[in-house]
Image (cartoon, rainbow, N blue to C red; front, side):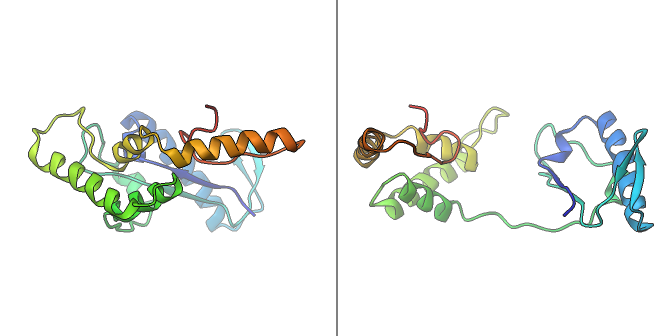
Length: 174
């Protein structure tokens, strides 16, 4: 299959760089529309897989975000997104960290962040979104987490190899 690229928070890129990227994406899309097997990209001939695609995400209205130039807007089809259910995401994350009362804690955490975003003064450095919620949840020590660490140690004693997987910041290296 072809390569897929997803540029997150695309409108945070400098406007000058957006123009360059627009030209590069145009080159790829024109080659796809012509159904070419090979095409020249920035002086290098490349194989083109018809399943390749480029996606972008944007958060319009936030500080530091640029409006996309018209030539770049024309390259993408807009899709509206809805605000995620922070409470449910927080609940699932808390369950994965070993909290047995995750539902109640998730409600309290998300309510605190929601009230903070509504009632505190608006400052560029304030962040009450999902990143902040996830950061807060990672700061809490949990007895079950300690049990998992002990279980992991005991497993390393009796096994020759093991793989530990988890998201960034989940405590794999501590």
